[in-house]
Amino acid sequence: MASGPLLDHAPRESVRTFTARWRTRPLVEEQMATLLPGRVVPEGPLVPREAFGRTGPVVVEIGSGHGAAAIAYAAKHPEADVVAVDVHVPGIARMLAAAEEAEVPNLWAYVGDALPLLRERVAQASLDAVHLFFPDPWHKQRHAKRRFVQQHTLTLVASRLRPGGRLLVATDIDRYAEHTRRQLAAHGGFDVIEGERPAWRPDDGFEAKGLRAGRTISEFRCTVR
View 1 (cartoon, helix red, strand yellow):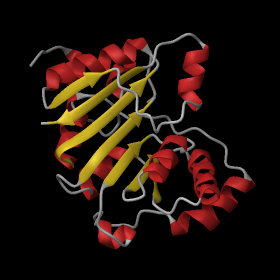
View 2 (spheres, rainbow, N blue to C red):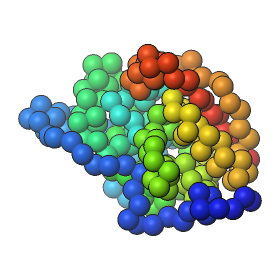
View 3 (cartoon, rainbow, N blue to C red):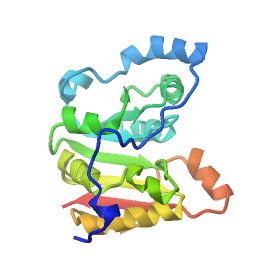
View 4 (cartoon, rainbow, N blue to C red):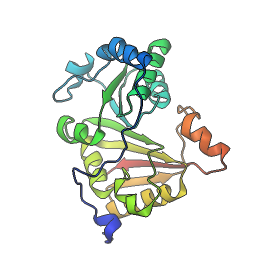
C-alpha cells in the first residue's frame, strides 16, 4: 500500500467529517417532533426485522442532505429499506416532510455521525449498498484528513457490505475525485468502475449547482471484493 500522511491517517475522535452549523426554526422543530418518531432508526443494533418490520436489502446513505436521492432510491426500490444519515437537522426535517408527501414508507432517518452508526450498530456483511453523494470536499489540504473517504472508513464500509455490495460515490470537485481515486487504489478492497451515473438519482442539489458552475461530476461504483 502507498504511504504518506494522506494515506496513513488514522481515526481520531476529535476529527470530524462534518461541521454542525445550523439554525433551528419552529417549522423544523415541528417536523422533527411529528415526523421523526415514525421513521427514526431505533436504538441498539440495527436488526432489519426489528427496525423496519421486515428483512430485505438495506442501503445507507451518508450525508443525505435534503433527502432527494434517498427518497428517489426508496421509491425506485420498494423492496429495500433506506437509512438516510445526516447531522443537519433542518435537512433531515425537510427530507421527512418530502418522504411523507411522496408516500415513501421505506425511508428511515438517523440523525448523527455515520461512523459510530456503522462501527457500533451495523453488523458485518449486512448492507447491500452505501451511498456517498457530494460529500463535504474540505478543500484545504490541511483538512484532507476530514474527508470521509479514508483508508479506515473504506475498511469499515467494506466490512459492513455483503459480498458484492456496492459503495457509490459522487462528487463535483476534481480534487475530491482525485483524493477518492487515490484512496480506493491504495485500499484495494473494491473493484472500481468510474463514470456510471445511477439513473434513479435526481440531478438537483449539489449536482445541479456543480453543473451550472461548469464542473465535472465524477462517479465511482465500488464493489466490495
